[in-house]
Amino acid sequence: MMVEKQEGQRGTLPTGIFAATLTPETKDLAVDHVALADHCGWLLGNGCDGIAVFGTTGEATSFSAKERMDALETLVKNRIPANRLLVGTGCCALPDTVLLTRHAMDLGVGGVLVLPPFYYKGVDDNGVYDAYARVVQQLSDTRLEMYLYHFPQMTGVPLDRDLISRLTTAYPDTIVGIKDSGGDFGHMKMIRQSFPGLRVFPGTEIFLLDLLEMGGAGCISATINVTSRLAAEIHNRWQTDDVRELQQRLTLIRQTFDEFPLIAALKHVMAEHTGSDGWRNVRPPISPLDREQIQRLERALGSISFSVG
Image 1: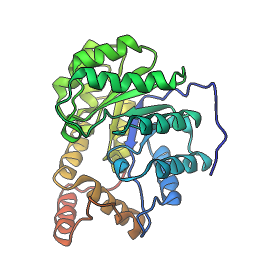
Image 2: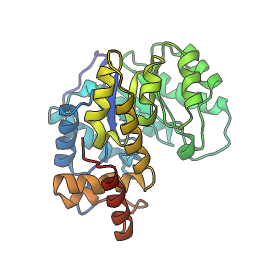
Image 3: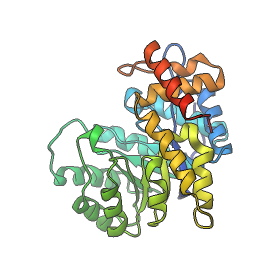
Image 4: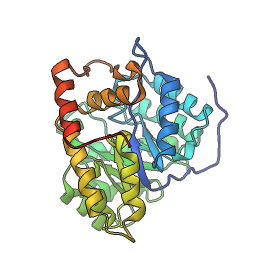
């Protein structure tokens, strides 16, 4: 499937509330293109300013480059606005990152979210800097708007102040933001204070209000798949109303989900919400929730009167 390229355009991403979208799968564990487009449309109609596609929550590393490109093309073909998509393109192999990034740019996406190469651990900042720099240099395209992806629990490759400083100094018009999924508010605060021109998105709703009050850009989170309206209400009202109780509610929901395997738990909830068992499908090595986990999850969500949205 081919989609007409949108050359010469810089599809700047909006700020605000982003779901790190789940990737629905068929019974054969292929991308369910129809369900993905429907879900992205639902998210944009229910509070999301944008959608992060093929990040951690989207099981990106479990899909081939071709599968990821086909899915992105299908989303654009199905009228999901490309400039509201933040596309995960970071891979271990540099050519794969370049391929996915160029493809996303040619479709006019709002930005790309790039993990550092994550297989080798204990690498120094020079190697990580070189990996990012080579992507920028090989693409050599003024349309490129890159968001760094700090998730050391998963990658084993943290992005520290010195590395971020080197990258933003070398490529000030290209490195425009960061998703911080490290869970350390001190790290997010440091980035926000040290790099005032950088868009900083926490990777959990727990820090949404705190970071907004510091000039943060919004939030990119897995659980926004099911909390989009509540998160959007906080984002839209925080400057004029007292939204601390809403934030406490949002935090409680996130903390409840954090007690379970997150992707499988969210997919179970989506299956219940949509009535489609296909939502329970996950690619190995992730497993669906077992019966005992489902029972515990449903009790936990019932105890906080949770409903999707």
